[in-house]
Image (cartoon, rainbow, N blue to C red; front, side, top):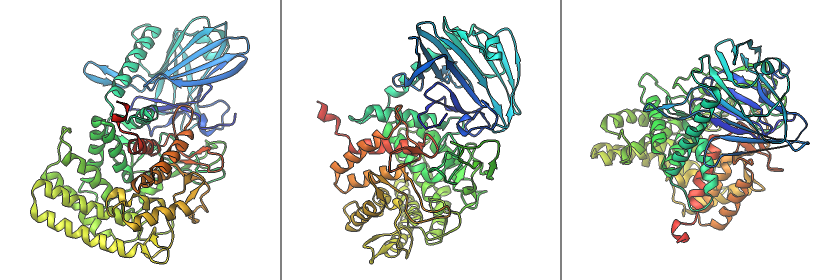
Length: 594
């Protein structure tokens, strides 16, 4: 089977799973996002059929899938050539129970005949050690146990256990349910539990969506983006992963295969901004707490660019040989060497995220002088590093420059500290940080401007462009009406855009010349066009980007500008954030509807 990224995401803010259009669970890390994938067929394990949960309908001719409205419950419809129709429903339970959120490391799957007399085969083959090891299997009267290297899974079902163990086909003449999770005995009939969990989970998601702040236009796209953003949240710590996968290549034949099941500080501001716009304040506050917890740790003299969902940075990178890779394109990597890099933008990212707590009266834990003092330490580091070389936000592995975006983020740290100090009535600190911000701003405007190019450039004294320059007005270092910013947007449109899509940069890097566009950069370009008054053009590009979403409304990290095919880790949280930001900017006001 040739894989693609037409996948459905399910989860419950403890873990996530991906399901393809034929109802095969192709990826699921348990018990949490960065765990060992019990299902990994997306990355082609070398054992036949290993690492998947498949429902095979005999004589299948058609398959389609959709989400139940405003939920994270996925429904796949499978049709055979005899008129038989099978409905597969997949979700992870999430709902309030005894005053707490119930979100077990459990997958629930129900299979129901809708028409005819279909025959199905269920093949459940979890694996361990990144697809290297099959589970040891034992069966009971209504359950199957799967012994893996670091956990035991129990499948509880009302389907014929022998058919599951021997992978034999059976006539589907009634609904069957599967609960796959911890090795715990189900205390009630499995079909009853599945129905109750389904009803409660649907009610949870619809209630969550009901309180979102939405634009007038593109509400379906924004709701799906919001649910996806929520699904990429590890609620226990508040972390938001960049994606739920590892090693989906940026383009065919590329070695740009990275593990994205972690949290990058550089993206924190954009996530906080999106959650704020949506009114998802609980999720936003949890995420801010995760970021601030890392940023305020005085034991860390320097911040890392990327952290695990538990807040640690032990992310030593290794290659896994037991998985061939997406479409056989390796290598498959676990961990991320970016944690060893110097990326000077992270200090501004943390201060920007934390600033929300000082100005948002809705939050339970408002910022105070004690937090401000902790953030000042990050500001001092930003002041020291604003004109020092680093790897930049694109994480160049073998080349360091004084990157304009990193310097802008250092300015942002000082500028926001000045605003926070003013808000707290700390006159002396206001003056100090305002002067520091002004010093950095003057350096940036002098060193990042190229008279030869007539625009801002990616690094001090350089001549190249990168898409992060589109954020200069968003961050406030220049006004959207500043002719220098307008000229920079024009230059990026000429040089980094291929068709409707914007590249991060086009120069060769450690891995050669980039082939595919970076999805989020196109949204940045759309936002910049909106800021400089080219709204009609921005709306057209936004509609084109929405057309690139999967049938379920999801986006990955990259896309091929020639045919729009999605590449890169999936679903990419920050691509979904891009949908939210651009829709909020471009939508007609609610007053138009009335």
